[in-house]
Length: 461
Image (cartoon, rainbow, N blue to C red; front, side, top):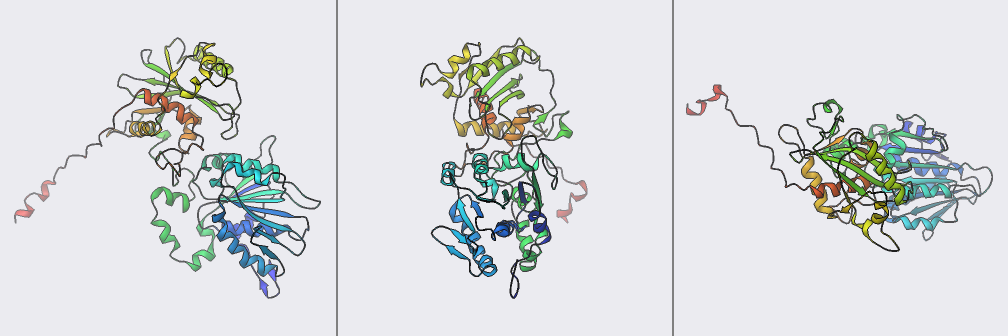
């Protein structure tokens, strides 16, 4: 990008890689300081020579756009001296007639503000601040207003936030970085990693930046400096441990290898209802000491993040009955069902619980005390001095493991789990935990102090 007296802005090597990608979706970042916002801003200029081109750059709330808009004034105005920014419309208009808008989507309902509009280029800054519903809705707005434009979506983010789980599942888990993700019926997408070490301008301008990052708490440092997607600020259950090396001995890990449950152990079935959102079922065994083992799960999603498979209650009950009559761990067992109290409500006609009883699948109303239920998780996840917790999860419960570790705190109810996240299996199991409450375990005893015999008597000299 140049003006008469030289370049206004030039991409750094990693930014150039991101901006050159041909995929329909591309996510840039994974760590702080990689020059992500600049890349999104400059990429928006690629087609401003086309009169009918429209670009849109989004942040979650409008106040968060201030820094982006200020940065655009620095570079857009220098690169295109006759371009004009309209403060009331939050829009740049370029000499050709092309426009770039700045927008926000603080609440999911705000997506209707973009209904009927079209944008060739859509960029999400800090993508993990958005929900899947908000992001996916904008696919319908990504369409051309005339010939000759390219329609595509770009995003940048750090780990953490309400959207951490779906972003990780969509861009991080399916393939290694820099490998195009291709799935039937979907357009290609890619994750382009960037770390602060890729931003030479930042490090030259602020040599102490790395020192500041090293001072952050461990989870935040791993996410922002190292780009770790397994540890991030705002994660609720940081103590949850999935260590395959200890699946067999069940020490210092919550996830373990499945085993044949003794016939006399009690079995509980937890249930959280969902139709447009996923329904969730967990089966849990309790041993003689009250230790719980989640042995099986059923997750009613369609394969898309936090999206239900829209099964009717009777069909869900039939599926539960089928599993409990065929699974060797459950067949012939007395199963105690406990569920979300909402399934007993009668709005019109029969309640969901009454419908499911037609398949002889029964539930009692669970204790829906959210904070108490959350604390039961914390109590049970705590390891004793031998590395043994009061709750295990079989490794085949993959959806619980995935969604549980990605739960974040609610910004308003700061002690509670954010219900906008994928919390359905968490809730189903929470009812089971509240059916089997335990008291807070005592802290592990410190190892007894044994003085070094060589030190004895030194203070008597």
